[in-house]
Length: 272
Image (cartoon, rainbow, N blue to C red; front, side, top):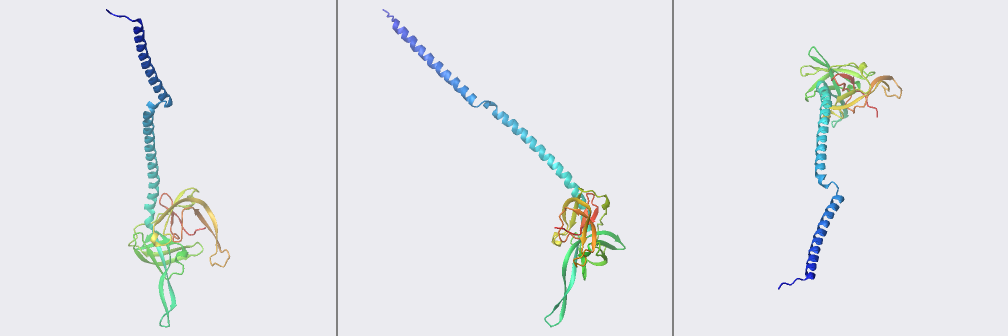
């Protein structure tokens, strides 16, 4: 005969209730835990997408910036290189060779020729098989011999045509057969302060022949006091163009060139 115990039924209900409460309690804990994670890291599900989008945008911006910079660089560089290509072969090196006398081993005066200095010059004309080169007077001063070095390394003997210490200019002549490029001259009176220019020459010797430096016109009609005989007295006030393009010994007599490749000045002095 069956036995029914009210207490057993109540106990079973309690057990089922306790299991349900455990399950709900665990589920609630899981949900709360998930909420805590989302609250602690809000938008964590979007982080990768946002990062990816930002990375793509930054990459695109970076590529666009590089393309812009390259475009600007090409435009600026081409203007300079075009001017250099046009004028550089007309700029030559000039070696001042002087004779020195010394007391020899035989008890007699002996002499020898040696390089006394180097400078630059600009080919400005060809006529009658001769090529004419303008340079500074102080480049050729006291020379017993003059030698011209072309941009390809060819060396030619040169003769002095004439010189003027007051303007610090001189003209020398070489055989014109090997001269291929003649400089085109512009008008210095049309220059404007701030205009870009290029200096071409042989700073610090022929080993740096054809060196290019770039700058701007810093000033026009500058007056520089010149002491020609070095007696401490001013002999001449030279009117010059001022530029911030780097110039060093050996650049003397070289070309100052505008962006059209035209010579608009002869580099003469450096003021430190």
